[in-house]
Image 1 (cartoon, rainbow, N blue to C red):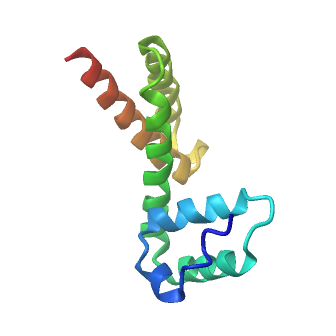
Image 2: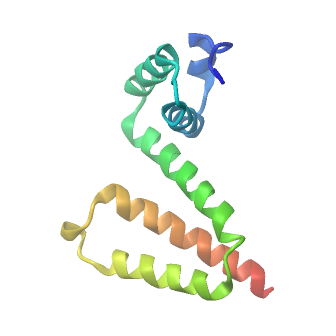
Image 3: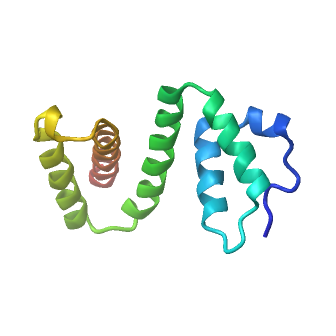
Length: 119
């Protein structure tokens, strides 16, 4: 399925950073990816602010994690909290900045999910 055949450069410019990341991942996972669409998206990503794109990427990853978290048992969620807290407890020099931001956002999402369940 070629999802970008109908997208022009103008439409790609209107996409949010999160949507660009999701579409790029989806295209890369296809058996025969549309190289023109991938090139168009990568060119747009290169023009954007890297920090803002990273936040969109984190937002997409957290949303994907949330879809799985709502199906997990409460015990598993507590284990995920412990896992993320252990990583965040490490000194910043021993961790990857992107990974710290991602785990922090996931930790917040999991805590919200648990508080939603207990109410």
